[in-house]
Image (cartoon, rainbow, N blue to C red; front, side, top):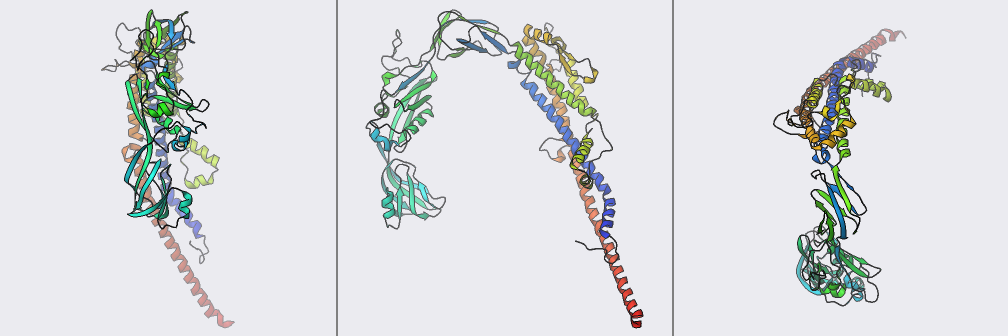
Length: 601
């Protein structure tokens, strides 16, 4: 903080501000130039995003066969049979004379209630619920020297297994701890080293904090039950074995089954106290032991096989003979009696879904060109093209207000927020006015649209006008397109493939390429030119023209600011010297005055 003007009585601070304002005028111009370049860069990038979006949408729109040769299927009775068709499907009619049987999935359920007396709680451990289930034997496994590395100091740790039956020893860094499985005994014990073991979860709670790096070693036994299931699927037999620890619940068992590769959906029904398993796939995939006449599986041939699993058959009460096997759908199509393992299947690109059985009143499926979808795809292309060129032409014609420069800091502070916004809006206007790069890009697109496509002499359509798509009669629209809807629909119905080729044909020369393919190439060229000038998000300044210009201005601004600081320091030194000189002169005057006139008093 400087206190000035005491000797001279001059407002030095204001004088300095006025002096430096004049000195800063060239810097303000440099800063305004930099801001203008940044606005121009941002305007280019905005146009580039527009070009890129249109280019991407061309590929996802009129260049996709699925959109441009789309088929629609009409069902005479959609309550019984529905269908969809791929773009490759032929226009045809399919007659479903009858559906004798729908495909179904194999399933099996507990033959009786699984609980003995009090109903089981499926969320509690099997060990705690064992008295509520049919008797079964646990398998016991001994674990010797299981090690737990203490990565963070603490008192609570966990063994790898739950359902623990016996604890032989627990040591920490070779020191043995007294083991308790009862909280009361643990709390009442005066042992120096002790640990409480939760047999259900395998949690260990020590009476002292174990330091980081310590090693816990445990010898114990845990209990589990094991069972296996085999399912027969469209890809062949699938086997899975399940190991269930005593601390796991019935819900855990069901979750493991559902998450396995078996393709089953199992659940426990609390009302009936039974478990059901249903194969996710419909159809019959195991005909072993099936009576060819009746279709009944007399021996073997089950699709969900667990006959040798004691836990499933004795505890969860599954009886293999109760299985309801999956069945194939049986139907007659175009006079051919056939079957499928699912109710949804594909014939010649037509995906048919059987929804109900019937033996009279045939259902006709008619496959036709989806004129509406193709029309909507082309219309979306035209609308987006018109929107894009309208936006770009607006930028090319935008008024340039040369009297409105970017605001300096002082100028902005002198205006209200609303006034600053209005000023800046005019200052930004016209950044791309009459830009040759964008104008050339639009001209290339117009040439792409008007040039016929070399699709062969016999092709019914060779250019957009043949489809009823032309430029508007208003020259002010600057090349916007309009659609004769009746003519376009007629062209689509006449030959949708030929319409598709007008847009998406490919070949070695530009004349051989469809309009959409040409436009994508032209858009890519314009986009690359814009990126070369204005860069893209994430690019460094030295990688594009405007960026290099901005960096050059940054260097000039930095150098000028450094020189301004030197000028300001020089002025302050000069004013300080003046103040000192005037102070000295004042002191001398007072001294003379006191000597000349002081004695006369």
